[in-house]
Image (tube, rainbow, N blue to C red):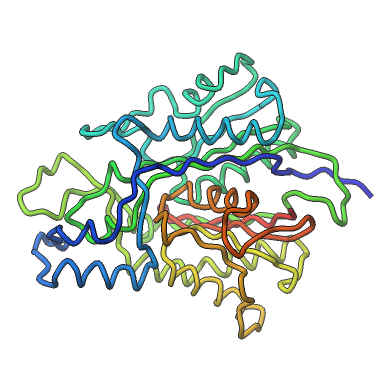
Length: 360
């Protein structure tokens, strides 16, 4: 029996070249949200940060690059790996949060849209190839995949290019401890609507999405620097870390279970979880809680690939870059085989959660 599914036929990624190590932050003075200097030594703050998040390094773009540049590079790679003619792409969906933030400026630039710039960079002339941006916090790339899948099922499109790209290094407050979490990067995929075997064929099996926007809406926001006397007109990414952690632990496992249940695949068949690389301990906790919802006391070994240790939290780029590294064979200890069922999942500003069950 045959059916149609949305299948990832090519991936690409751009990992920025500038390595920012934890030791680089030990020369900083950190301040709290009340603009009071934190008396704990920077070296101790950095060590505690690494113990909790697992982040030892992160990547920043060079001064002459921006998120549109990274998006275009990852997109070209995804197109080449898929083998398609770019003129046959029906949609270009770019997930980001801040657009182009030029070095030494305080404004984001989203005119024209990042997706329009990517289409321009690819040289696509087909006017039926619709390019648009998507703002959905860190789950943006997965949401773009869900969007494309819905358009496919509606008969509106058959091929889509979905990109997650962000230069968070341009919007971090160096006086804020949370600034050490964030990084830059871009990942992309080509998604095609294809006829496959219903029982064993590849493609998206199910999805789940949730938004909590009352108290949770402002767990991540733009605010002034923690440094006393800073210019209030200049705003930086801010995060209520404890609130984000508690929210994720409470809601993400259930959303992931809901997604897997919709797919009709049992928990024991799940081979990998590509979860947003936000915080190592939080991600591990989410996976454990999801398995407990299935009365599994132990989490399977090697189910969760991670690249946060060296790449940090690049928001919308973490999931596609991680997936690309695994299927490209460069993620140590992890690989996929045809027929493996995996899950993409993320949580972020909004607050938003989503998950996709996918057969490789």
